[in-house]
Length: 111
Length: 114
Image (cartoon, rainbow over all chains, first blue to last red):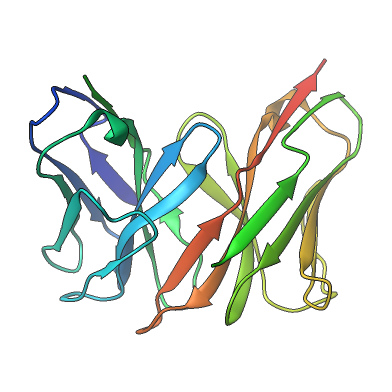
């Protein structure tokens, strides 16, 4: 039972490069989420998708775009990476009124 | 703006001690409060609380919610080194189509020493 799978696990980018983080879930959940986690800041919501075909901004959406490709997959794109986007990124999914389940994260460094 | 404050931010105890972690919140259209444990990777779900005064238990861990005073506590009895982790508190409010946005606190880092 894979749950929430994120790829890649680690990535180093140069400033200005673009990158797409992939997330897939096999729990038939309607809702999917992207968070970033920074030291001393906790987890902050970037974007979420309540259901297939919809996406909405969270607390810190600037510099990111998302695509809900189908019910299973939700990707996060950095069009022009900046050092301030160095972080650990977590994808999560949930069923209706159910707790969110998280992937193992992508550690992203931007030089 | 939703707000979740956890205390203490860090805590060091000896094996066998009992600890209490605190979480206070301010949120519009509150739905639930969740506790997660984060070791090296993904946060893992512990409890979801929606009603005041009903204690949830899982082994040595328990949690309770007070919706009048807007706080929750997480208790861990007879702590073990495997309890060392960051404990995250989060609150949800409905955001359409059954999805629930989570607002997290900064976490409490618990270290249990032998």
